Amino acid sequence: MTNSNLEKNIPLRFGPDWPGQRCDAKTRKGTACQKPPLTGKARCRLHGGLSTGLKTPEGKARIAAAHWKHGRRSKTLTEARKQI
Image (cartoon, rainbow, N blue to C red; front, side, top):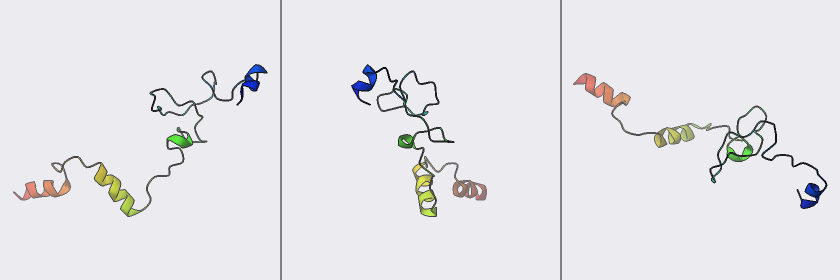
């Protein structure tokens, strides 16, 4: 959009006063994202709306390892405690 559109009183398509649905994400600045979400999603394409998730077993194992905090409640440790 150029300044000539503002001078002609043509409204901006997506701005702070736009009444439509917004992306749920926060920007790095800390403000809410102004873009509309993708159809049927809650996020715009820049904030994960295009993501379909991990599909391969290697990818799923990688994300499970990333969420690992400690092993105190894992199946192997629980079974070991039962044997003791």
